Amino acid sequence: MPATLDTHFLIVLAFAALVVWRVYARIRRVVGRQRLSKVRPWITVVVFPLIFALLLATNLAHPATAVLALAGAAVGAGLGVLGTRLTKFEVTPAGLFYTPNAHLGIALSLLLVVRLAWRFVMQQTAGRGLDPQSMQIGSNPLTMAIFGTLAGYYVTYAIGLLRWRARVSEQAAAER
Image (cartoon, rainbow, N blue to C red; front, side, top):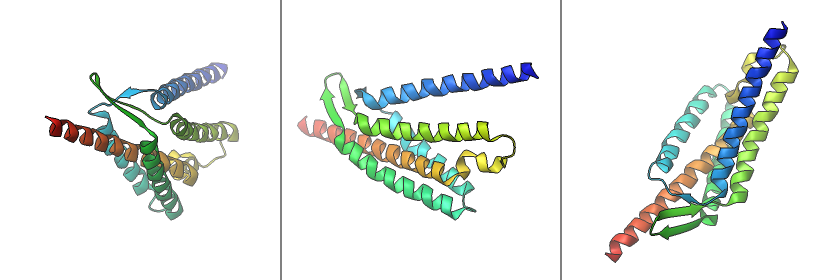
């Protein structure tokens, strides 16, 4: 039995290290100046809505969860518009750059991290008496509302980046 416990502990530790590394990478991306990629905003605009739609489809039997997810997406879209307005955009000879609002990006990232950590702790400390269905990420209304907020924010922000790129391209074409 102790070997199983040690293996479980090592798996949890490895997973925690992976999560910490990804959170660190995410927060670095939302804090500093970045080159505007031609592909990354399009991936965000396509992938996040697909994931969101799949999670919504799995929650059609739970209207409260679906409504909270949609409400979160609406809040996220509003935050995405605000985030785009607070972004510093730069056109340089080296390319197009932008610096997102650090406070907004960090707050949204930490919101998800804290929620997932809370669910993880609850799952680990509650024991085996829990219904496995209740511990699924997509079945919890609060988690879905937070995911909806993040999805709405990132998609709207990516659309804002794409629109800015289009405006800059139009201006450059008009100047030629």
